[in-house]
Image 1 (cartoon, rainbow, N blue to C red):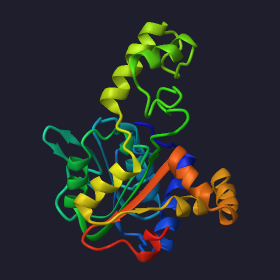
Image 2 (cartoon, one colour; image 1 turned 180 degrees about the horizontal axis):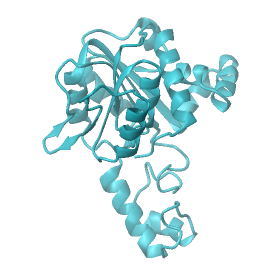
Image 3 (cartoon, rainbow, N blue to C red; image 1 turned 120 degrees about the vertical axis):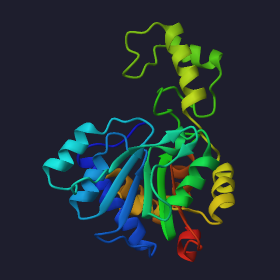
Length: 268
């Protein structure tokens, strides 16, 4: 899973706080937080460093470096297990019911093969009134961010992928591979490790589990730094730019357990 690291994770923490604050769903030091699909766990460290009771879960255990860093910084209590591996069969987030005030993910939902199972588990471990925020690539992103193949979120047939492999398109792990190898790897990866749903499909899946959803790309742009904030300023005059950002670059969704998302968020 792709996951932001270093200073980007620190900026992401502030971004999430600002988005939630605007939508009337503040998190405070002491809030219990889950990074769903946490990767190595950089964002968990950043949240803990700001006083939040943050935890991470991922299907792959690669936590040792960040676990050690948290220990060295005094951010883990004696015997506290802040990083845990998600069980695949049966699918289970390894925390008790009604544990978290806030669940977030960054560049993760495009990998979820069974939305229903993942959402049901999020619902189980969220406290009543708990909120969840997820940032992930759009289906129609011009360059699929893992394979680097144009429009591979939608066009993923072997013949199509072989064309781009022949033309030399490679990600950083494929530089030395021949075209047929790249084609096979990309075909298998897109089929087995990605799940690019349409906006309508995302809405249907989340609504069936939580009964509410808001697409909050506008708030994401507003509180981003650099290019995102520039797009937001342009979108104030040209509102269709937010829709283009959502359709062709990034989805940002928010939902709550046990109550509706605020009217302001739903109108976004």
